[in-house]
Image 1 (cartoon, chains in turn red, green):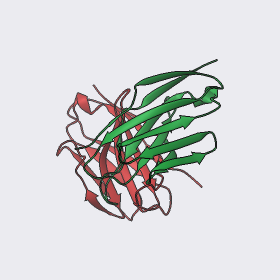
Image 2 (tube, each protein chain N blue to C red):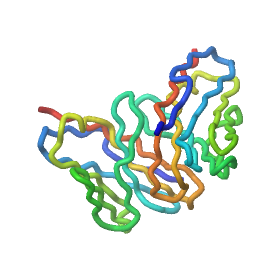
Image 3 (spheres, each protein chain N blue to C red):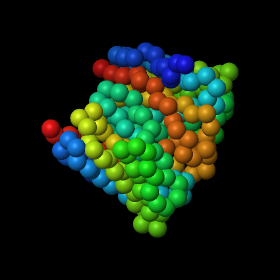
Length: 115
Length: 111
């Protein structure tokens, strides 16, 4: 079966513009996570969904960031009024449960460059 | 808050054994995971320890000591394809949160 897919794979945008990043998780996976990774750094947790609800939004760096998930499947991460410090690889992961230790399957990421 | 410390870079020889250490400070603790990431690739799951002791999966083993807030990943019979970054990660809440990752250890394998 298909793995986690993300689109676009690359996005270059001008400072101040809004961007939408999409994640298609593995079918049947109820938990979905967004992370971002700056060059040479570890992964920074952004937000988690269990089904369509987001119990944990604590990782969102500012109110310019928002995310939604519909139908318990596809999720979009929206960044408004992008800033240069938003440049990073945005990774989506899904897992069949949110229990600790459950393997998270990562997508290939969206590389965002804000000029 | 939570933090994880791991060496930024480790170099080893093909065929040898290497250990990558991870120490953590978290408000809660629900287990230590390890992920591998090749350059330009997505992280892939390697192992998970919830209890003290050693977990072995083929050439890779992972160890946890909860009392010492310490774990390590052991890679045996190193192959060139093992050149990658290795991240330890913890889940310090209940089910409803993401993983907190260390900054990663870049493993360089020399022939």
